[in-house]
Length: 335
Image 1: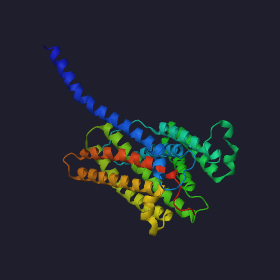
Image 2: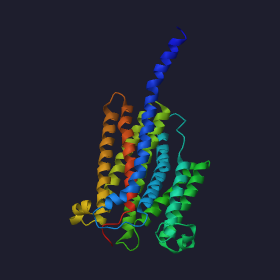
Image 3: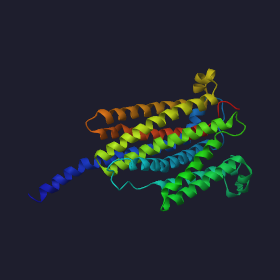
Image 4: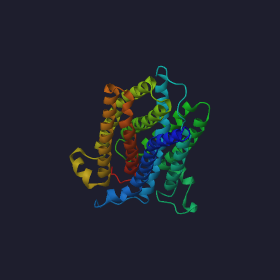
């Protein structure tokens, strides 16, 4: 009796213990599938019935840019949360394992794929002989692609070094390169557009990557006052980031679509439809963030805010995928 009883109790205890891990694994799998499916199949769905033509390989480009954005969010979020942790009284000395090296490697692969597309005249290369590497140095888009490629490589080396904080500089170079790429010189007031994208992308990466890192850190620390303090610090900064993202997003959209035609273009153009989907997702994220903030302030256990925060980070992953899709679609207005 004394041998079989503990065994049966342990078996009974193991059942519920496995359930959260299984749910988490299924959620991650679903998120990965959606993150791949949205950019791959999104262009054909968004362009259906609009009369617009997609660029060659739009789905592949959207997927590569989604990976690039995600690779930017992870290390920037870790650096951001690292500064918040230093401001938490009594914070445990150990933190969760860094994903920065893997993120930089993924960003390097995505940047390499995007550079190969630029090197073939914005066409999908079918063989290595079609790629004109030297041509990358002769165009603005090629220079931007090379900058992103080298920046992710340097970021990976910095993350592996004894001073991982210096990776902020190559990551900043990627943000600047993306801001310049999104607004070519033929556009009206391209520097204004690049400035808006710079702020928008930086704040979005800190928001999404920061929340992911906070949740990983809380899981590593366990329950306690330092975890609640870290979540509270992040929530206060996230409110400012959300305000900046909203302001720059609205301004950028109005630069793309004339105010008098916004409603029409939100349903009649691929860019508008995808933008509308992104706005709705961001609204869901904002509602989840508000729910987490209310729980953080009013619930007996402040860490109950982690429940909506976990759903929020999944929704932010979908926002990243939709953002990658948005960059591969034709703009509604040709400047």
